[in-house]
Image (cartoon, rainbow, N blue to C red):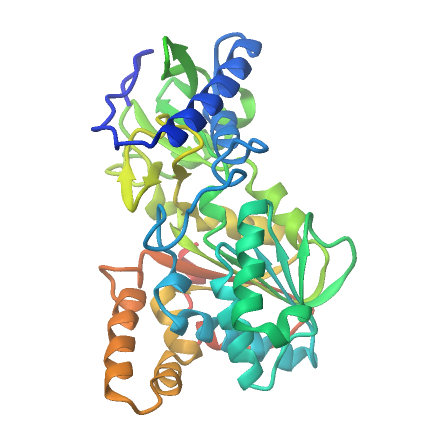
Length: 398
């Protein structure tokens, strides 16, 4: 990012429908009003929050198809039932150690993971007492209800939707698949003598990047990271999530005994903030394509950043959990028994087995999701060696 107040050069704009254009206009006007109220500059963290979560307007708050082939991106549960089956096997181990319990999924997307986990746990004889879903999107909640009622009508009564984190203690497991990457982040530039924060201004009908000196909290956090990255060059630009500790504590605080599973794309801090990654990881997603201009078409495109798993580990420590596992998605799935899942779902049929093998490659191969995605486990008041981290545990890398 250049150190000036000019707009980033946007890529070729995708064609939008009239309804999409109108929605983007409404979101733009809403954000513009907030920028004016803030004196002409709004932090990128606040912009991202509004673009994704403004009630009735934000990407995750308004009705639009987001997941799968017809949406903006595809998650692991949409690729294959193998993923949900493997998560189910890990949850079954946790509930077995506790003598029963419930599950809580944070941000359940289309509902596919919930369906696959419940279906597999039923065959394993390990159904949870309840399957709770914390979902802020009314549109996604309805899609989840429909899918679960369609595919698991006999288990629909076991599912409960929550508007806020549980307000009472429970035992079991919490699942958060591709949730942390959508937490709003602060954007910064570092020089040896200063730290600047990037925010958003308005130029005509466009949003533009504008910088100003970082406030104390962001400046301190950036300097702490910079102290371990001596090869940064002046103007190094990246992002960090200032709200991760508070947010993760709020959604996990009522787990009295059990495990939290975080599954997302990201890196340990030492690899996240390498000198060669001097533009950060911030990206937009629209119609199955990456969009570099994250300020464009607010409310229509997803905005994400990779997860700093070192910060996530610190968050677990500060929230009173034991951070017990960190590994790649490929090793996690192998550890819990992806080969057994392939045999179970294939049923001995050659066509089904070939199809599953193709899906498994997308989940496991380094060039696909296998290494880019990581899994971290927090534990509280439960003593067991989680199968998902039995092949290789990379806690030392954090």
